[in-house]
Image 1 (cartoon, one colour):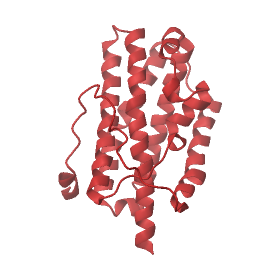
Image 2 (tube, rainbow, N blue to C red):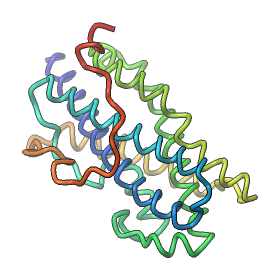
Image 3 (cartoon, one colour):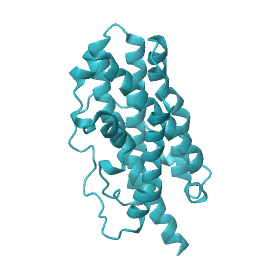
Length: 232
């Protein structure tokens, strides 16, 4: 019974993470377009956001290899399980794929809001890693544990460029209600959506990889070999 529970839990966690990592790097493509239009001479920030994008892609590839190693596909989850999806929908009133990059470029307040949303999302992810890396079911899988430890190392550099932009441009920090929205989204996922996914026997697995049809925009950073990870 415990073995089934553990395998199901790892399946659910891995499926949510692989969706969010994919959503992360595809959404950052839009952010990069906005920054390049808005501040083409700010090569330092562009490079830092490009690294953020590459890290998210690297994390996605690691989770994909983890599923491949287990011989199963991820559970089929949609944007309702995406933290950044929900945050953007609440803060901008539209789906993340429908964000108007031109409006974000032209209106300072929108770009400022987007930076706060990304920063809060990434900091939430870093706090969640601390919880996962103390979870005995996660720690029972050495490959998954290594993946989360790699993500933990990468995370601090992910919110830094957005926080620095806000600081340099004398923009405000997130207010209590923005932090409350972030907390609500996390609690909704943890206490409502995750149990629903765990106990729902009708949730099917994906039949293809979520990145199968997308164009390659930049070369992803190489992910560590899972064979190497498993020996670490």
